[in-house]
Image (cartoon, rainbow, N blue to C red; front, side, top):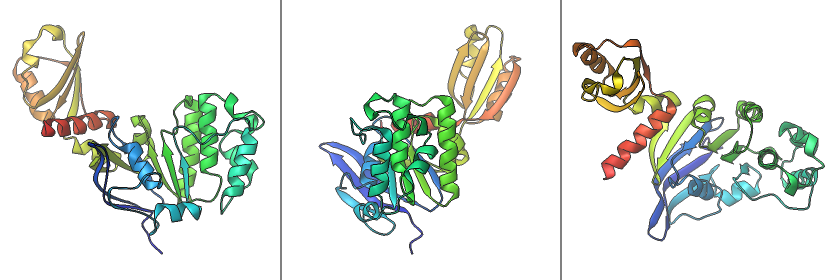
Length: 301
């Protein structure tokens, strides 16, 4: 039995002159919760389409559980929640979920699926009368209608309120704790930071970074320096501090990014500036993501 859930081997996909996925190689293992990050146009949706067999690669291979995507999906080993589609009109939530359960090779009880997705109270409502957040929860119910080993989620919490998002991720943690692999694409970087065991950063179809959230932050190679300084807006000495990679001044509050925070702070005091409330910290995942993708853009230009 293979221990690899998903394997991309030098996978590329073109749309005309645009290379959406460029030589992508990666492997996912059982029980991992993996966040797929990238700016618009990075290739996230195409990568998920290739994984689910909705599109075929121009080169390279995609394998799920040692076989092709279609074989794994027909066997019920994959559940998917896509951004749109998948919901029929003029049926109730309960009817749609029951159908999904009946079609799954390893189905759960429909009542359990409705409860786990938090949609039992709207089970009798027509699908086309749902709010955006409710529709997302129904899509989640369809993705978990049976005992799948891999759950693929594309922007799963779009339209959900904070309480619903928290309940959703608690459910997904339970899925991972039971040995399932969870792969999700998201624009909410705080979700990736809090939820994912592993983070993949895509940019122009290429894999720029692969590691834990802490490793991704360290890869950015910069730290944040925050302090208060009277008259900061008019202080020219701030703008040529060594190792500075970014600066933002708002009133008397200064926020810096530095490739060598110790040297930057040393120079700050060396120029006769005396900041108050000085703090030095690592980048958050969002700042690290921006720094990594910006460095790649600079390298390509």
